[in-house]
Image 1 (cartoon, rainbow, N blue to C red):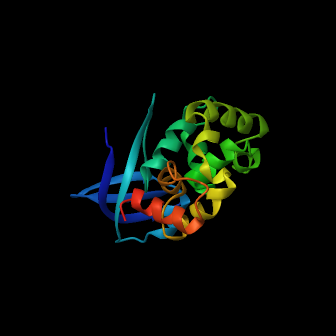
Image 2 (tube, helix red, strand yellow; image 1 turned 45 degrees about the vertical axis):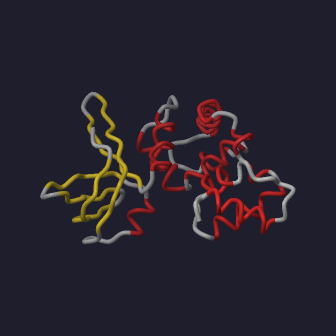
Image 3 (cartoon, rainbow, N blue to C red; image 1 turned 90 degrees about the vertical axis):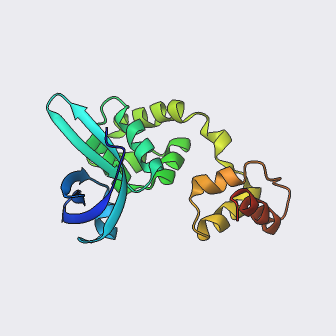
Amino acid sequence: MIGSLHGTISHKSEGTIIVLVDGVGYSVVVPVSIISNYSVGEEIELFTHLYVREDVFELYGFSDLEGMEIFKLLISVSGVGPKTAMGVLSQALPEEIRDAVAKADKPVFSAVSGIGKKTAGRIILELQSKLGELEELDLSREPEKEETVEALRNLGYKKSEAIEALKDVDSSLPTEEQLQEALKNLGR
């Protein structure tokens, strides 16, 4: 299986890029963010998922592992295929999808072509059980840590990294001290 690709973008079209790796061009379906952020001739590294069904072999690419994992979870939901899952990832970042699942925010999913209210509800229900208890993991719901999570995001960390770094930090500390502790946990 192809787990990742590192090469040069040789062609771009709507939703697909061709990544040239050692003389071999791989056609990869990618989220809109990759199409808009990269140009032909640029080097790119993608984490990939090979989708195989009877007569379909498609390679899907993501700029990070979290995006790929969310994609895999989405396609595991009954009625959600890879094109629909890619539509969700083109519309929302992985952390926004996790938030939508935690808050049961159906419009995040139903805004995607091919997803109605029933399917949006099924996605939320199934992902809540697969992602575990999001309420426990989402420390940004703690008002005492919300500001620190935002500060870490402004420093370039993903929300999931910020939440993980704050896991064992005392929420009664002032924001500045929480930030210092979180940065220590992140190795800075």
